[in-house]
Length: 191
Ligand SMILES: [Zn+2]
Ligand SMILES: [Zn+2]
Image (cartoon, rainbow, N blue to C red; front, side):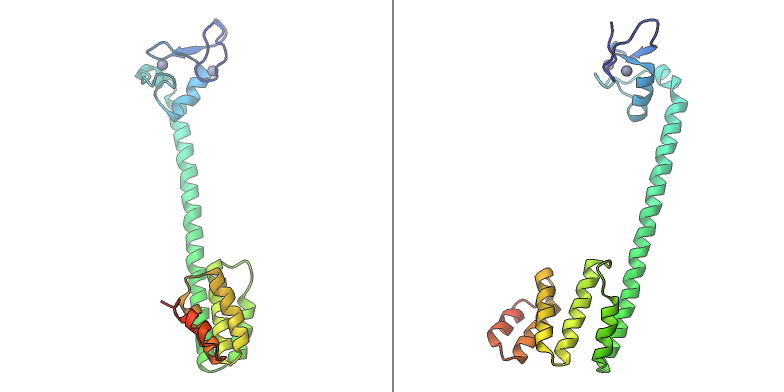
């Protein structure tokens, strides 16, 4: 009894319909139909199936192709929407940062900190959380709370070593406390 090269089960003569490739490799019709959706060559010897063979399944292959295309399009659209959402949340965060900068310039430190506190939660992207931590550290430095500033900025640069402004204000806070060695260490990491 011949064996199907796709499912490896027997092909029972008179019961199972089958088709072979030009090199005589048999497959169940139903197995071949699925296979042709992925490839038009024999899975065993890679010989292309003749046009007449493929023709029998053309409708089914086209249908599957269309379904694949529709699924791909759907995924692309979803990705597009996600991208737009990321961009718009980034833009609204930039506006928020601008409003914080204004408060800092006006020396409204407590108000700025309370607004940052409201914005801070673990659902937001990590880069934004780090920017918030930076702004809190910077504000604490500006209002003379060097201990708090060091605490926050140190946590920030531990999470993101490539945050030059974090090191800059960390250095300033150390310097303000007279910790010259530590300030030096932070300044060296600014660039
Ligand atoms: Zn089979
Ligand atoms: Zn073959």
